[in-house]
Each structure stands twice: as structure tokens, then as C-alpha cells.
Amino acid sequence: MSQTQGGFTKQKARNIFWGGSVFFALLFTALIVNTEQHIPQRSHAADITPAVVRGKAVWETRNCIGCHTLLGEGAYFAPELGNVIERRGGEFVKAWIKAQPSGAPGRRQMPNFNLSEQQLDDLVEFLKWTGQVNTEKWPPNIEG
Image 1 (spheres, rainbow, N blue to C red):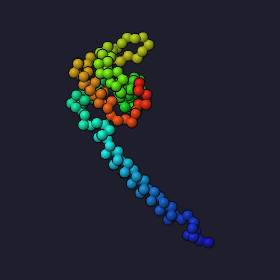
Image 2: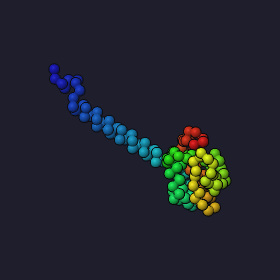
Image 3: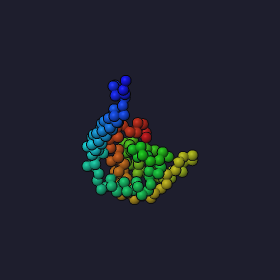
Image 4: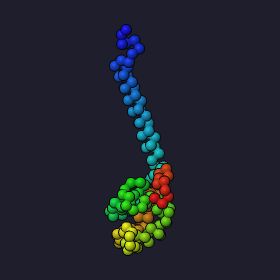
């Protein structure tokens, strides 16, 4: 009996490999296209104001991500801030930043960056915008 009568040949294996590769490449491409179409609605890109851009610059130049997470990215030394405006409000956030370091014994201390009122307002606007990004309920714990 020859191997070509119903056996698994090299040609069949090659066809399965190439067929599967093409199928998954097309599937991956469709998923990328679908995701790219939904990003502007999920990120609220139209709501990015000059204050949000300036607030992001404050976030980056003070290396806030070195201690905090934002939408799950960053360090886990300090709380998640993706939903901090929803949890605490903008005025609380500004007062908290101004009051640092708190000097409370046994607590991690945030440095005082001596931000101006404009910088604080811009940072709050940036954090407010990040709180509107559709993260599909991330972080799962409202307290970050």
C-alpha cells in the first residue's frame, strides 16, 4: 500500500500549515482593523483640550508614573489614578498634592512638586480625561 492512499503526506501537512497561516493572518488583520475603528470612541480623543495636553506634560515631567499607575500602566508603589477624579474629585486631588509630603509616620510620602495653580488645574483635567477613557471596567477595584 502506498502512502498517498489516505495517509498524511508532506503535501497535506504543507497545505494545513499554509491554510492555517493565511486564515490566522486574515483573522489577526480583521481584529486590528476592528480595534483601530473603535479607539477614537473609546479614548474620547475629541475631548483632548490644551489643558489635557498640558496636564499630561506635568504628569510626564514629574515622573508620576514612576510611583502611580494610570489605566493599569506604571509602578505599583502608589494608587491607580485612572479613576481618581471619580473617586475623590478634582479639588481633593489638588489639595492632596499641595499638602505633600504629609509627614504621617509609617506612610509612603509623595514629594511636593510645588506646582502652580495652573499646573494643578491642568493635571486635574488630564486625570479627568483619563477617567473618561473606556477601559472596559479597568481597574476592577474602584479604589484602584
